[in-house]
Image (cartoon, rainbow, N blue to C red):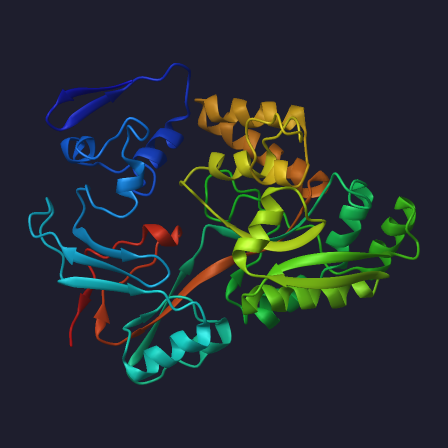
Length: 390
């Protein structure tokens, strides 16, 4: 229950204990808990849509420093400054986000001056701008994960030894320093470095003999053949190709299938994959935002109430699921930290994931852009202090 105390205070009462950091991170994250004009929202509510969610998808009822003027999906978003913002008006009058999926096209638009910020360049493209006149590289750690996933409900990945063999076959350095050109933070656990509860353990490295031994113990001394799904993004394709080469060395033949995102996620969300490469971002700044999707699953059947990553990969561990729920209720900070470390240890060796690295957020700006600071949760980056000087 949420009740008004005075004009600047509300009281939140929960039906069960909730860790303080969860409350703070959810309430403080505008992507989940934004303040809206209730009367404006109610005016667009319907019997079928009492919260006016459909209207809110394309219209503005918020209280931030910018007002939504236009949102054309897959084309552009236009925001205009809200001069009556409580902290004072933003430094730019208008922000236009243009959807340019291809990194090469983004680079071309930046070079021509058509855009001021390129948000999704490849690491090798970013490197071209280091020290280049007229441009600046802005970087910061990302609370995100790049990973491989296997369907633990399908042979041969229902065998934990096979999953462990793959972890020992991957050339992590080739991915981090080759494909990513160092634009990555090494890590192998599901809570990114810098977040509360992160377990700083990286036991795996490329060890072909150990991987072969584990495969033999699992009953696959000659390896096997498997399909790997990848999106069409150049980074994911490059990672899939590297993994294909790595696993060939232990007798696993990987056939890569590239799919557009809609097709990729349709299969993933329906448990219809065997092996894939993907990424995951953090929804709110608490380890619960990682433990729930990666570890919370007690049944992989259609009756499952939650169908996040663990369910998609048919990984059900009721003991770990109970620990995830208990950690979300734990009020003692150090006890809670220990719980998340234990959850990560269990996933590290028994889960259906191979954590490859944590990305480094990188954007390139024209030097007319000042004041841009990247948030570890990139979608939470503030544009209120950003200004354009030319």
